Length: 128
Image (cartoon, rainbow, N blue to C red):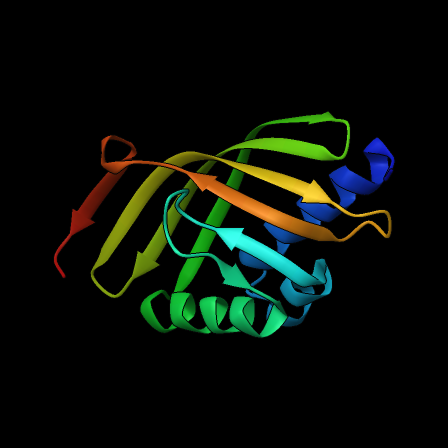
């Protein structure tokens, strides 16, 4: 089982990759067989190539993403991350509050990401 420091490092690497707009860093914290269900209930993205496509699509729609950690709780091989994201595009932005739950493998890489947010936690600003 990964240690708490490994889990924190993987999750913070994930967060930092968005703040730094660093695709390579994003992919480096993910296990080869990573699964992302974001939001929970949607069709999962499976594997690094699928997460790379997720990243590319996200940054086609965004100039920058400010990802702020509100709280991070680590237990077992998982972490729950309470976050606030500002997603900025030309002339508009979105403020998103939510929770991501991560499961980390023995090598310290993220193998599962589950995203929780709903329309009550998304605020759109500006034009489109």
